[in-house]
Image (cartoon, rainbow, N blue to C red; front, top):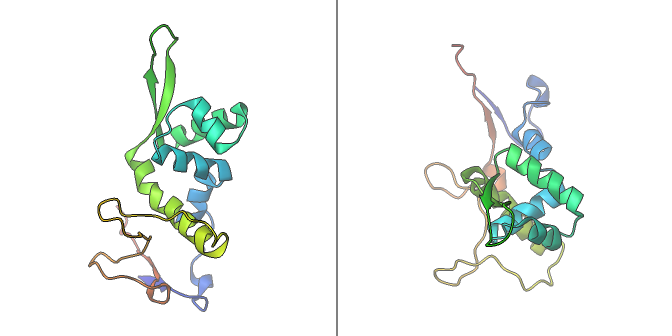
Length: 159
């Protein structure tokens, strides 16, 4: 098992190119509009026109983005039909999409702290009303600070 940690780690011992989860995730959702679609889906937006309006992109761009997010499994397309109207699709978060939301919330928190410290928006725990934050915890429940975080390379046994 190799442990890669911090800026002085031996990066020549293993190459992450093409195998890094960050790289693979960015390939799937690495556009501004994809992140904003995920934000809107979390807030309950389901209809194509509402996504396009709230994200501020053209219908062609929205069509492409929704198709990509459905293809990678973050959103699911569900048919609906209003009385007297043709059948249409709505878009809802999948379990994988919900699992992705801490990434969006971490970007929200970083942007609020480092880009727009004037904003009145806060992540909030709805149950008690306190501010909420995104943090990293180990499997035993300990809060992990950036200087305590490493990346372990598991050598899987060949099948």
